[in-house]
Length: 437
Image 1: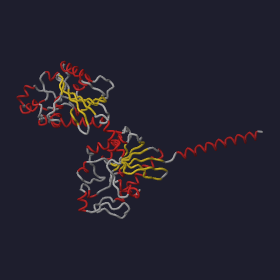
Image 2: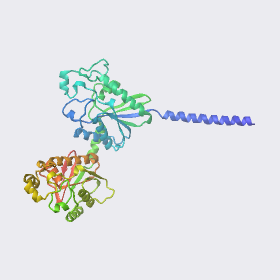
Image 3: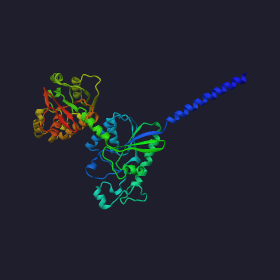
Image 4: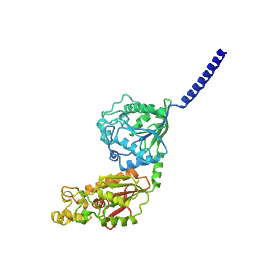
């Protein structure tokens, strides 16, 4: 009897083991190495505008159009959830990846830079135009199938590039394939040589259009080209950008301070707001319709922070403090009596009092109006980079003299609105800043 029971137990255990093994096999059959790779080329750079060739050993910043293009592509890819991001080691590739991720809401993903995914190496042809290269060397790349071609410029052949890029590209894919999902890869347009080598029937002699996407499907060691030179993501992003309300920026300069009330020139020095200044802010606050405020950017100076606290009542508001918005530094003129300055620095005070020629003002031992204006413009570009397609408003707190320098430089003839001693303007951004009436 005991033997019979033992056999029953063994049979049950064997049956359970068989079921478990079947379940494991089934699960493994579902866990295929499968990955979709969204291969994107870098956005437009300054060297392309100048028709200058640039390879993997050189860098150039993205143009304004290139930044816009990357952002629009990010909007178009918003519905694609990426699990990993890789790019060429060049700054232009990294910046393109950054703007794409930011606009598709996935900026927290790490961007992995790979040296061997960088652009084709040009050798002595670096920095030349295509016409110059043609006249000096003729063909410097050769055919992607010609392993014996040697670049006359001492650079990299198309065949060498395709193999160098392809080896690292496949290593990255095989590393991430078991995790599945979608991978974003940003590379230079020389990636066309790799695509021609791997998918000659589809790619042929075609080139890649700006803002195009190639989707590759990797499954169980096999790579297929699902789509090539697809610009629909960019078009979708452009259409989305056109429907999102323009970013609005309100810029408010601090009102009268204690030092100013005492007749002193106040730039890099700091003092509290005067009683009349605070009353002017209360008056402005009652008339200023803030609307959907997304964030606040504020000068790092105390009087700017005090101005902000009088206007913004939301304790949870995101505030970014930046010295780019600090008041002009008047150097040797700093904190001196305005009356004395008229005697000691008559030409500088004439420019200061004009309210129109701050770009020409150079304070002795201090800062020029042109530099201050550029500094403020740079701060506003930071705002745009962060919130361009947010559909809301950002409020900026700065100071009277730097605001005037900015207006004189970038919007000559335009004037600020005034509420007592408070000066302010409203702008909107669509590829450039525009003053609102």
